[in-house]
Image: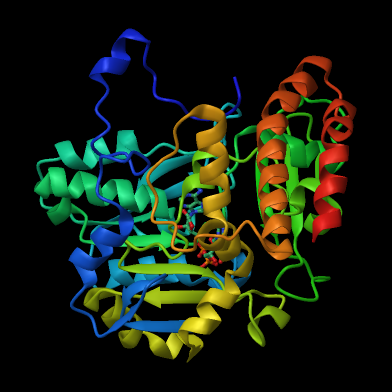
Length: 409
Ligand SMILES: Cc1cc2nc3c(=O)[nH]c(=O)nc-3n(C[C@H](O)[C@H](O)[C@H](O)COP(=O)(O)OP(=O)(O)OC[C@H]3O[C@@H](n4cnc5c(N)ncnc54)[C@H](O)[C@@H]3O)c2cc1C
């Protein structure tokens, strides 16, 4: 209903539900503990980033990986080098589909051309259960690289601990940074804000990060959608209200209780280098945290196809500033509210206990409250958009909250 993926279970099934590989329940091992187990022997450590080998920023210089990539093009380049060097035989990643009911899906890519079909950034829910089951049940010796958001990598690590066979089959775990994930309805909301006037005209192709010749920096790109009617909408992301990542339009609730800004359980994590001088380059640049030796080796062996420089911990945190402040610094405000409203909140590391006395903290607490209200309200408002086939219901419904929020920045 809300365009979110929920387990296909009935109320009766809930008692039987196995949450032993869920990254969001209190009973499972958290990402920081997994990081310490897998990478604790490495020389470098920071309480937020965990243990790591190297921090880089840069982009791919060979082929069209960068121009066709979400940012610097390094993820698909890295995957193809892992295939080329026989580190793995296949890649488990997300691609765009032609199914209007589910625009993105996990699949297995067995060769470089198939890897190139991987999505750019899919701000859209996906489910990896079918492909992981396929890999788990396969009886051959094939090994795979896996690409996922930090929570998916965390879940995969829990699965690997439970089923060691999966550890052997998936020796390379790659994460992409994630500020937060959106429901399926976010794609439609963006398309409607870009000009689509009929919700019933389904999206057949979408590019959330369409690079254009007019982009002046890495934050400038277009939202682009094609529809069954053949209509196309392409607008500057920043011209669309829902393109503002500070406003949690149609955000998945679990993301508000995720502290894994730096993909702690992955061998290597790629994101956007939103720091100077990289952000000035409209073609996009990657931020990279390298952990495992296999990942480091792949980067070293193919470094002639990259332009990069080493960066420090402060640069990495700065490049994820908004996400870091929201999830590491201010999560305790949301945990407090969750307990007050629902009587329970997940057990989180919450490294910063925010003071409620000073004016700066009071402001930040208000920001968290309004963001939570927007997240909650936007889900219901979009249901009304679907029924009324009218975007104005949504725009009017969030207007006041967004105005209050913007006053606080
Ligand atoms: C929901 C979401 C939120 C993000 N938030 C941030 C952020 O806050 N900060 C930041 O620095 N970067 C963020 N990113 C990552 C960023 O958008 C780029 O994916 C990253 O910089 C890699 O770019 P690239 O050019 O190297 O990737 P490419 O070479 O274009 O490869 C992209 C890879 O990502 C995979 N992929 C795309 N979408 C998904 C998905 N939903 N789930 C699993 N795999 C996927 C593709 O299958 C492919 O393997 C986010 C991405 C997503 C999907």
